[in-house]
Image 1 (spheres, rainbow, N blue to C red):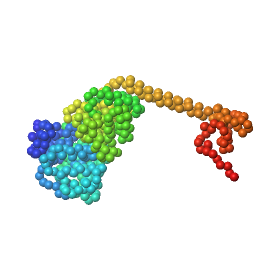
Image 2: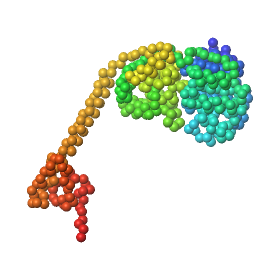
Image 3: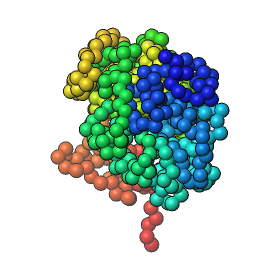
Image 4: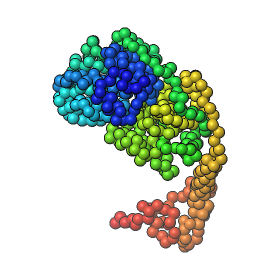
Length: 464
């Protein structure tokens, strides 16, 4: 089937043809006719199957008629992260180039004033994250009573990020007679409850089982020691030995680990960028742009990059940390092997990850093959580093007692030179007693006082 059989307008078909796409994906083929028929849709599909175009293309056809009023958008799309929201806007810019539609983006990290000015001019398509959208409605600068079509995208990610209460508030602000499109990759019980509450007799479109891994991704796991430096050694070896590595996303569980690993890779000569939730929006977008353009072949990221980001030619995904939640594994490896391309996903597994790996294998219904890695050089490198640190520590350990012994052993002869009794050396202090304190008067005597602190060597004026 081609796009021309789905009921899309001529302008949209021309835009699709200009991008080079000729055949719709299964989710697009099944969802687009129902959206054009103005039915609610519950779409379940794994990441990378073209869900964004499944609602963008029919929305463009629907929006060809009519015009938006000030501060009252005609359609609303909710996304869990800023990156996904910006990516959806790029899809509208690409497919809606021949239409005079106003598209606004409401995300954090951008001035409220700039966003207010766009809302004042009238918005046909409003793409927003839940928090920033509610900020605008509470300020009185946005009315949702004109929304005809509501899209809730990446709903399971919304659940993970704690946005479900915000989604429920937003659904109460839009008209009851709206059309709702609900897209998710998994269907946990909480998501099922939300769909039952806010969808009206929806058409269910499921093109794959929830939480299944793409067949185009070759998965494997590599064992490593539990220490972070051992995992970093394994990762460096994997990066150096990888065949046909064009670019790669390296996932960590914590934002702090992202920063540490990013710095380590740069130190060892790898060109890498970083992406995590604590970065400001310009830095996050700059890192993504550099990665998309190929200026940075490696991107170290937290799970903020695991959902929905459209980077079609990612050749490798590395799980530096095995995710705690099995669903996150599916989304991470879904960043590669997109649009029918082959991809490679490798997880670095420590003895502490056995339960997590077992849960992932149970979820995806298959075993993750173990790959053998010759770590002789990497192990030698680690052993040499540890031996070097050990030798340095031993030298420091031997030196410290020696310095402690010097005042007791040699200090009695260095207290120093002639004493006040005509030059006879001072008697040695008993080893069990504290060393004798040196008086200020003794400082004026000639001799070697290099063992004393500098402030004790300053001349002292005698009182008259």
